[in-house]
Picture (tube, rainbow, N blue to C red):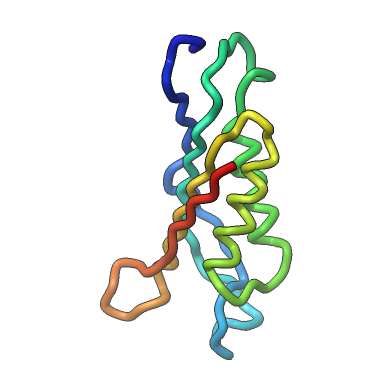
Length: 118
């Protein structure tokens, strides 16, 4: 990987249940979210799992946020998850996309995408 210009790590379509939303009917219950995470890493030799970001770590961060209590805005959830992804010092940027399938009647999903860079 040392010769690569870019290393991208991703998790696509992670399903979680979260207490999320600003409306009264969204409080006290969970609803589904679909989460995509994309990290751009510093190109470097990767010979073991210690040299990269484990997909399970990304999923665990998303699940921890989802079970951490009510969040009003999907934007807040996405930004908090992106910041958690930037905890790895070799991560250059974190893009998090969250779809909230039950948010808008007649739509497949509504949601947000955030990109945080170092």
